Amino acid sequence: MAAAPKHTPHPPIVYSFPDAGGLVDGLAEFIIKAQKDAIDKRGRFTIALSGGSLPKNLQGLIGKDGVKWDKWQVFYVDERAVSLDDPDSNHLACTQHLFSKVPIPSNHIHTIDVSLLDDLEELSDAYEKELITEFAHRDAARFPVFDLILLGMGPDGHTASLFPGHELLAEGDRWVAYIEDSPKPPLKRITFTYPVINHAARVAFIAAGAEKAEMLARIVDQPELGLPASRVTPAHPGQLFWFVDEAAASKLQYTKTSFQDHKL
Ligand SMILES: O=C1O[C@H](COP(=O)(O)O)[C@@H](O)[C@H](O)[C@H]1O
Image (cartoon, rainbow, N blue to C red; front, top):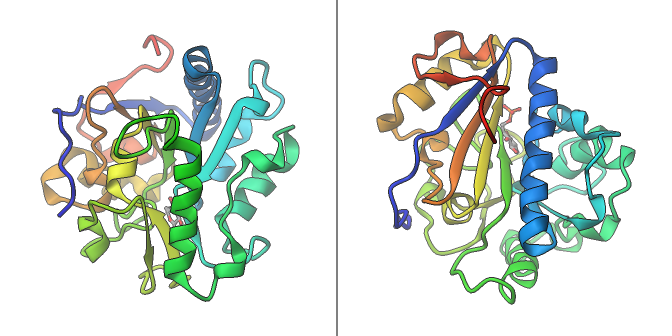
C-alpha cells in the first residue's frame, strides 16, 4: 500500500506564463530561490530532475548570477536503463541542455551505475543506496527530503516512470523501484516512488504546449481520477507548484497565480 501523507497537503500553486520563454525564466528564478533557502539552512541543495521535455526548460539557469553549482547534489527522478550516452538517457538530455554549459562538479551529479544495466533490481538498489548515502546520515526521516523535485507530465498523465494502472503506483516502502514493462519506450527504467516525491520540500511540474492542455485539466481539476501526476501531493510542509504556459493552461479551470506578484 502507498504510504498516505501524514498531513493534509496544501493546494497546488499554478503559475501560468504567456509563453515558453517566460516559463523558462520564471523557473530559473524559482530554482535559485529554492537553492538559496536550502543553502542558508543546510549548506547544500538537493534537487532531483526528470527527463522528457524538462531538461530544455532548465536553460534559464545558464550564466545566471546566484547559482552555487558547487553546493548542488543532483539526482534523477527516473532514469531509463540505458548507457549514459544513449539518446534515451535522461542524464544525457540534462547534460546536453544544462550540465555541459555550467560549472557543476561532475561528482555532484548522481547517475545510475551502468555496470548494472542487465539487472534492474540491482540497478534500482544501487541508486537507492546512493540516495541513502546522501540523505540518511543527515536526516532522520524515513524518506529523503529533497529541497526540490522537478517533474514532467506525459500525455497519459504519467510522471517520473509511474504510469496509469501500474502496480508501482502502490509502492509505499522502497525509495527507488524498477519497471520492466514501461508503456512508453524504453521498456526498462528505474524511478523514485511516491513516498520520496511526496516528502520533498517543494515539487514543481513543468508542462508547456497545447498538447498538454487536456491532460493538465484532468490532472489538476479532477484529482479524483487518480492519474499518476494527480497523486503527487507533497505532505505539509511540502508544497506543489505547476509551471505552465498559456497553451497548456487553456482548458484549466483551477485558479492561476501571477508568478511576479507572488512572494516565493
Ligand atoms: O518518460 C518520461 O516521461 C516524463 C514526461 O515527459 P514529457 O516529455 O511529456 O515531459 C518525464 O517526466 C520522465 O522523466 C521521462 O522518463
